[in-house]
Image 1: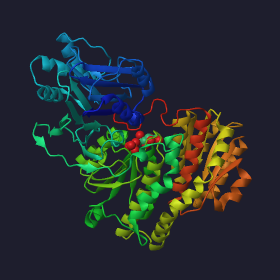
Image 2: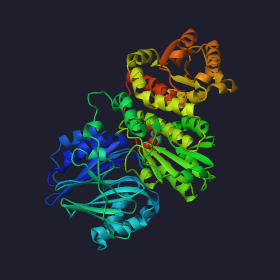
Image 3: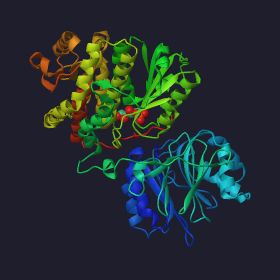
Image 4: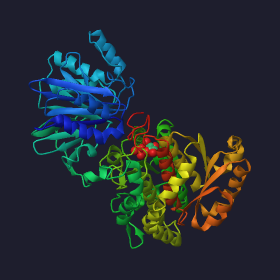
Length: 612
Ligand code: F6R
C-alpha cells in the first residue's frame, strides 16, 4: 500500500510530485505529504491527514516550497492512526534526513527502544520514523549518506520501499527496496522513483525495476544502483508501452466505470495474440511438455478477487486436465505447510503482482520445489519476476481499487491456460477444445452486447440501493461467480452481502431469508438450471425478492420466477462467468453511485496490498 514518488531535476518539484501522487492515490489515501530540498532553504515538508486535496489546499495557502529535488507519499495507515504527525515524510530529530516509506518495519520496536536509550525523541507512532531517526544517528556518528543507508538497511527487518533526502545534499535522492515495489525512471536531466509507472509516465517511459536489497542514488544527471553488498549494478531498462491516457479517466465519472467499459478491449488484448487459427498459443511460456507431464496436482494461490478467479478456474481446469486443483487463499497457504513438491504446478494470480501474501505464498511454494506460473497484470512486478513463467493479462493499468477488467482478463487467461495444457496432455476432448476456443474469440463482442444494456442495471440499482443486506446464491461456476458479485457490492457500496452455494441454503442460511430480503440468484450454468430454479422457488416461498442473472436461453423460464432479470448472451459454460460478471459489476457500481459512495477509493481499502 502507500504510494511513493521522488524526483530530482531542474524544474520545481512540488507540482510534479502532486501530479504523481494524484495517480498513486489509489494505493492509499488517508494522508499525504511532500518534502523538497534546496541549497538555500534546506528540507521543507508539508503533510496532512486526509485526501491529497487537503494537502493541495494546505500548500496553496502557504508560501511555495522551493526545490527541484523532492519526494511525495500517500499513505494507507498500518502503524499509527491517520493524522498529520503520522503522515509521511518523516524527519529525523536533528532535521538531517527525511524519509518516505511503503511497507512495514517489523523490528521497529526494538530499534526504537535502542534510539530512545540514545536520547532520540520520536514524534510519531509509526514504524517508519525509526528509519529517519536511525539514519540521523549514523550521520551524527560520522557516516556519509550511502554508508548510513547501508548501516540502517542492515538492521531493518520487514518490507520497505524507501525514499530518502539528506538536508545537505540538495541534488540527491536515495532509494532502497525490499519486498515492496519501487521503480526508477530515467529522464533528460531529471530522474525519478515511483511505486508504479503511472506516477511518472507523463515524464518518462524508460524505467528499471529495483530488486530486493538494491540501493539507488539519483541526481539530475544519472542513477547509480548498488546491490546489497554495495557493488555497482547495471540495470536493464524497459520501455513502458502504454499511454498516459490509459491511466486517466478520459471523460468517465469514475475509473471503475471506465475499466468496466474497457473490458471488451482488454479481453481482445489478452486473447487475440494468443489465439491463432483456432489454437491457443503461448509463445511466452518456458514450461516444457516433459515438465507439464510431471505435474500431479495444481495449486492456485491468490487473494480477494484474484482468488475468486481461481475458484472459477478450478472447475474448468479439473474438467480440461483431469488433475486435482486446489485453490488457496495466499494468506492461509503460506502458513499451512502445503504439500507442494516438484510435481506441483503453482499458479499465482495477481493484478498488481505485488500483493505481499501472494508473494510470500509464491516463495513458500518455490522452497518446496513447486513450479511457479504467474498470471499478472503489472509488467515487471515482483511476482512476475520471481516466477518460473509469467502470463501477462495485458489489461492496461487498473486504477479503481475494485478490480474489474483485471478479473475478467485473469479469468480468460486461466481458461486459455487450461485449454493449452489439456490439449498438450491429450486429455481434452477435441470438440470441447474447438467449442471453447471459438467462444473465446466471440467473447469481446458478446461483452459489448452486455455493456450496451448498462441503463437496465442502473434502473435495477435505483430499486435496491437502500437495502441493508443482499444474498447471492448459485451452484458450481455460478457459486464462484456469486462470490465476486458479493465482494464487488460490499466493497464499494458498504452493503452487507453474502454469497452462498445454493445447495447450502437449507443447511442454515435460509433462516436469514425474510419477506423482502434481496436475493441475487445466479442461474447461468446450463447443466444445473433445474437446481437453480428449485433454489429460487425456496427463497421466494420465504418472501425473498429475487433478481435472477441468467442467459438468453433460460430467459422465459426465469421470467416466471424472478422479480427482475439480468440477461446475458449464451456462451460455452466454461466462459459464461466472463459474461456473467459484468452485470454484477455494473449492479454494484450503480448501487454505490446511488448511495453516494467514493467508488474508486472505498473506505479502508487500497489497491495494492503490500502488507500482511
Ligand atoms: C477486489 C480487489 C481485491 C484484489 C486483491 C488481490 O475488488 O481488487 O480483492 O483482488 O487485493 O490483489 P492482486 O490481484 O493485485 O494480488
